[in-house]
Image 1 (cartoon, rainbow, N blue to C red):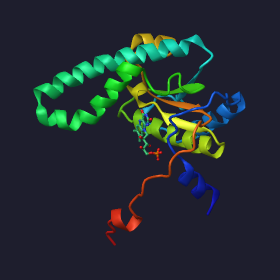
Image 2: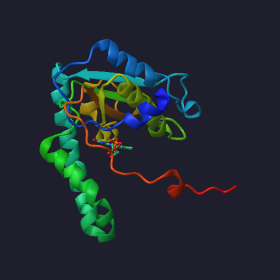
Image 3: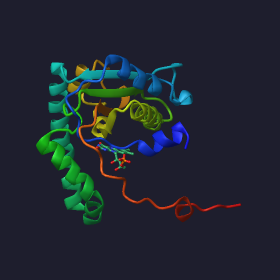
Image 4: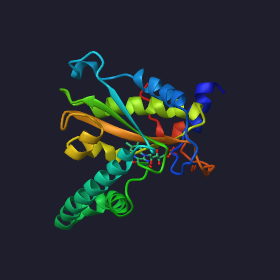
Length: 210
Ligand SMILES: Cc1cc2nc3c(=O)[nH]c(=O)nc-3n(C[C@H](O)[C@H](O)[C@H](O)COP(=O)(O)O)c2cc1C
C-alpha cells in the first residue's frame, strides 16, 4: 500500500485530545499542506487570499471564542426549532442537526478548548460563492497532513456560521461579513479510535456509464 493510501485509510475524526501540545513547527507543516490546496481562483479578486488564524488553548481568546460560538448555537437552535415546529417534515429532516446544536448550546462547542489548537481557515467571499468548497479542500489537505504527523484532527463546522458574527470576527481579527470560514481542532489523540464501521465496496456504490 502506498503512503498516500495508508494516510487516507488512517484519517479519522479525533474528538478526544491529550494535553500534550504539538510544536509550532508541526502546526506550520499542517498549515503548509492547507496552503497548497486548490482555491477558487475564478471567484477571487486576489491571487492568494486564504487566511489561517491559529488560536492556542494557552490564549484567553480561545475561551472567549467558545463563549461566542455557544451563544450563536443557541440562536441557531431557537431559529431552527421555530422552523421545525412550523413545518413538521422539515423538523424530521432537521432533527439530528437540532440535537447537535442543542449539545453545543448546553456544553459549548466541541473542539474549541478541548484541543490545544483551534484553527480558523478563511477566504474572502466572491462570485460565484465557492469559498466553502475551496476551504473544504484546504481542510482535507490539513487533515491528511495531520494524520501523517500522528496528530488528531476534528472539523469544527459550526465555525462556518460565524462569518457574520462581529464578536467572533473581532476576536480572530477578520473583517465582519467579508469572509467565509471553517474551523478545525488539532492536538494529539487521547484515545485509540474504534475501527471504522464497515463501508460499502466501490462496486456497490458506483455506476459506470461506459
Ligand atoms: C462537512 C463536514 C462537517 C463536519 N463537521 C464536524 C464537526 O463539526 N464536528 C465533528 O466532530 N465532526 C465533523 N465532521 C466529521 C464527520 O462526522 C466524520 O468525518 C464522519 O463521521 C466520518 O468519520 P471519520 O472522519 O472518522 O472517518 C464533519 C464532516 C464533514 C464532511
